Length: 565
Image (cartoon, rainbow, N blue to C red; front, side):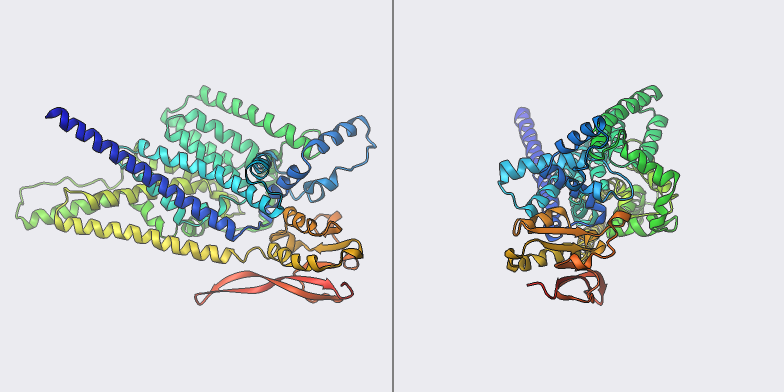
């Protein structure tokens, strides 16, 4: 009889465990579906994403050989003609600071593999989406690993379903699924940072710090702040020794420099270049980032994080405080008084939770310290604090998991059960409200890429243009370039008419087009009243939410010279 009971218990445990895997994988598919929907609904990119997507294009179509050859010939013969700049967008439009090609190189390899071997397409627009899908896969794989590590780390305070709740929370919010495919340096960094969080949760602090060192040196120099707060917490708690931390930093730094310096020096045509060191000097020493806007010191805490979390921020409060313990205490007190059991003495729950390795504040405090230190810089953007969102979602998932466990517990009395069921439904409502808000954010974001839309609207007019007229020149102003025009989109038009020539305006002095109108056959411009041109199409932009509807303005005008056929 005992053996039969043991067999039944083990069988039920296996079934219960397999159900958790099914639920977890289902939640992950939900996150993938939402992320893919955002990618397809908003396939274009903006100025902050332009370097990586343009670099991916150049590496895909031209590779690195022209840059290597030109660099070698330039070293041997200083008068060597510069034939490489027209091949690479970053040499014509370098931007304010250089960025690393490590991320775009990885996307290029993925794009080549998918497009030429698996998908079998050469359509430039599809290639752009494939490249973004590669970045999305990298980031979501990191979240999948991270979610799997959460139940074991909080096994004493959470159930096996906490990882499932984590993925559902990520999918219901806006920023993670929307930005996981956008070619921002912050997105590349987010994937690495989430992998580092996974190693931290699995009890491998040195590996976590090693990944953060590489991320700071290659992708985003501001990761050094997160490395500082997390590393200091690890040292103070005895998770690492000072000697071990120093060795990890040296090892990660050498690996990062061997990755970024040779590649970027060649592609930027420099003798020695460490891009993130230049960015760090620009932002931290020169404080030039403040030229792009200044916010109040508390902006991250009062504006950015509430907007990112929406209603799920309430679940973070549930997990990081003892509010549920106090609710349970009061319910027991009220039940005891109704039963006239005045002899029972109940201990008060603590006002402040005990912070140990099984409590979310053990991990959340160092991450929020990163936000506090980052708040000292005057220029602030939501994407700068992406590393905090996964950890906040872990806290929210623990809060949701606790509500779920209380509502389904068989030990609660009937009236307590109804209260906990009500609280759990409140948590579900937080998820639904957040998902609804995210859908609204997504609908507004659809109109944030008028330059890309305008370039697509130009396509039928290029098809109808007379190929016998010789070279057709398309001029693109700064606003169009900043809101969606990419080399992949231009390549799409070239595939329709090989006699196309593009002239793009830029902020750089050499790209300031003073008298370019006389060369243009077609023009993408934010000014729709240019003499000598007629408006063919209009791409809407500047979306705002007014009276429960999205209102846009005429943003980019697709124009044609009046004497052009």
